Image (cartoon, rainbow, N blue to C red; front, side, top):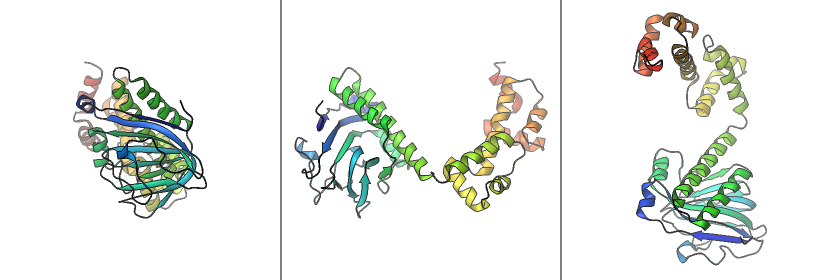
Length: 293
């Protein structure tokens, strides 16, 4: 493989998209300081200038491992900085422009793809044109995945598009996961402490006690905890309690009322109602089902 640039453009058949996602292009390019951008060698539909930009009919996920530059798009009209350790996602039908700074250049990896699976993730709000850039730092596993995609595209063995689809899914999940945790870098330790407290004292602890233990105001704690976990503290505690109940029903023969009490349910009627709402079954029906009776 050439060290400065490696490009692979792929044909996508209708059956490939039935898998849910298919890859159109993959590669890397190492642009030195002062070199023109983008380099020659791309098909005409991929070429653009910083001033004119371009619009693609596919998604592209780019990752920088050296240098810095700028990015803007129809949804982000003011230029934002991108640098080594940055992901940025291009959306089909969305005008965009990006380029390295002339005094640094950059090294970029990219993979272009399309398909209904990605469309669904966008529709459900996991990825949005309004927030296309994530700074996650230099990650060796990310580079390894891009190189795996490049090697797979080079060989084009039977079923290679399905394998490439898996690599894209892995890259997207890493980008989303790392960016999300980077956003919580200052509060992650406190939220993990909260989760440990709940795991240790799920049957007695109240959300307000957790906030007090962390020296946080409850309103602020509740907001950050819900953003971090997807659940309010009270809902999270209920889920942990219910999971302990289900585990005890499956793995022991303890009486149902004792299991409920041990999990923190003091009102038996409330427990039975909550359990049926959660599982669609009574506790005894759940026990019979999970124990194979």
